Length: 358
Figure 1: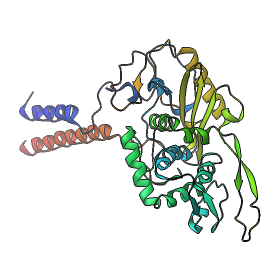
Figure 2: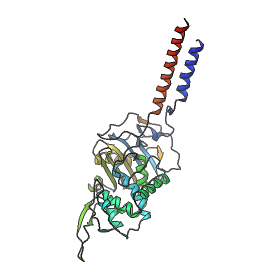
Figure 3: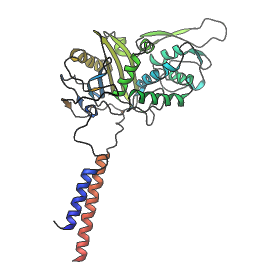
Figure 4: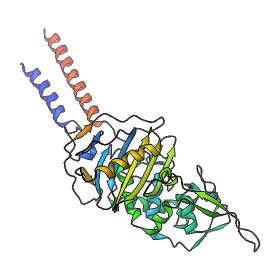
């Protein structure tokens, strides 16, 4: 090998070793895998881009698929909104709705500008029919959207939910607003420790006040309903929590079920199959095999993830129409391409110089 060839080989080798973003052959955290990760009985097939089954009491992740993929959360992000604002607001306080609150786009509970609602009523309005107007009103009551979003991001970091970036309190599609199935499980687990959060998410239906009358008359009400399918269908032990849908996110889901002294959380993002059947399959598997599998991770930020011994599949999940791709730049592939291009250029330059000499 002549000196020029040795230089080229060294450059290519350096590129292979030090290419920016180069990934290891296997992830240090098994939950970073894109396929199904489980140590024990294989879970049922669920057509979703990512999902997690976790024990709410211990924080153990029993199985997962693409747990840390950063995807658009849709209205499941309202779990973080609730966890953030419940300690900051007095449920008995009354808030007078502003025009911009009532005219937030998307799903709405129907609050009316100028009318007053208790904070308690607004939480029902946000978490049952997924009212974006109620979510915005709660943010306004807490000091405004900007202050609320800042608090949401601080709350996510405090809980160890590092895949999440909140841009608004509603979950509406927004540039740079992402979460993960893992983080949504963290928010659900944190929320379930709060009795008011549990009360809201497990309520099937309740009456909601209509426009405040101008005179001293009785205020009309109308019924609002929870959108969690397992709760509505009477699935045994269902605690509700939150569903979501947007064009870019597709269907998303956060649910909890308690049976035999154990509470399991299931989160799903980028759903292709029906929400209820997908959630039921994972809950049924979880309660049947929770004692037969070894945990593959933990929702607790200070716990180190154990090594999974059985990665069932590394194939990517089917992607629902309109579901955004994960926020992952393939920097390693780009780095390798740049090094190859550099090597080719050096080889070509050496060949040209050799021709000039001859």
